[in-house]
Image (cartoon, helix red, strand yellow):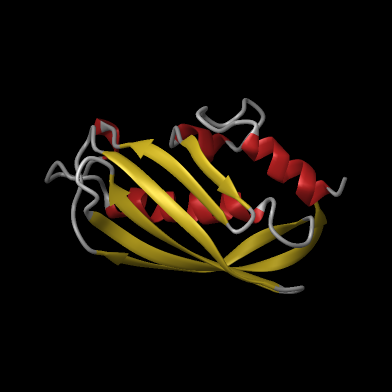
Length: 147
C-alpha cells in the first residue's frame, strides 16, 4: 500500500471524529470534525468560537481563510504523490459573515493533481441554513519531502 493510500485510509478511519492526536497543532486548534473523505474531496466541520471573533462579533476573516487552507491542505496529504505540498497562494472570497457557535462545513475539492503542482477549491457553508460564507482556492507546490 502506498503512503498516499495509507493517509487516505487514515482520514477515512477518522470520519465523525476530530483530528488524530498526532496531527498538526494549528489544525487541531481549529477543532475540525472529519465528515466526508473521498479521493478528490474532503469535508470538515468546524464550530466558530468566541476567541475567533473580530470586534464586531463575527468570525475573523483570517480564521475563515485558515479553514479553507486547512481543509484543502489536509486533503493534499492523501492526493497524488506522497510528498508534502507547500501552499504557494490562497485566494478567499468573503461572501457572508458568521458568528461564534455557527457550525461551518468546509467542502474541499481537488481541481488538479500534477507532478509539480496541485490545486484545490473549497466552499464554506453554514450548516443550519446552507448559506455560503466564503469560497476559496489554493495551489500547492509538490516538495521533495516525502510523507
